[in-house]
Amino acid sequence: MSDNDIVRKSKNGTIPAGLLTDDDKIRLLKTNLIVKSEGQYMLNFACFTNEQFKKFKENFDKDNAKLDEILTKLISDIHKSFKAFVPKRLESQINQWVSGYVNNIIGFVAEELINCGVLEKPDEEEPLTNGVFSIVGEYVSV
Image 1 (cartoon, rainbow, N blue to C red):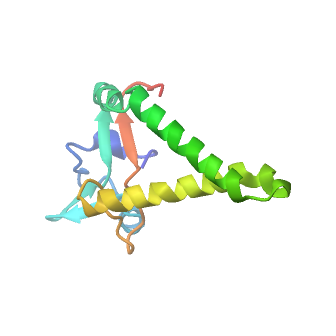
Image 2: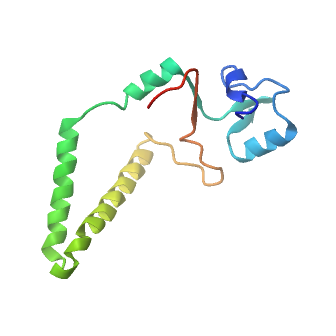
């Protein structure tokens, strides 16, 4: 895609005819990076201009002291819980167990967000491209 400058040459996600070889189409369809819609090939990921990406990124640059406080207390309480029943000789492993336990919570939260319709469950049959995006323009320092 990069060698042929496909993203930059596409208009509103539509790839111009003749830009992709048949082999490219097959390979990119297989990896779910493009889709065929109404006889045209389309990019199957978000494309931002530099300015659009900066605005998008600002949505995640929030410092939430209240949430940080809640999560810190939760992790501390979990650690105290483990410390109460783990034998002294295994105390050095508590942080690993707490980390694994807290990571399990992330799965429950993600599942609930999927059930509420906030997140989309990935298709098990297609390669996952939900985290793929492109920025057209100058280099963006994240």
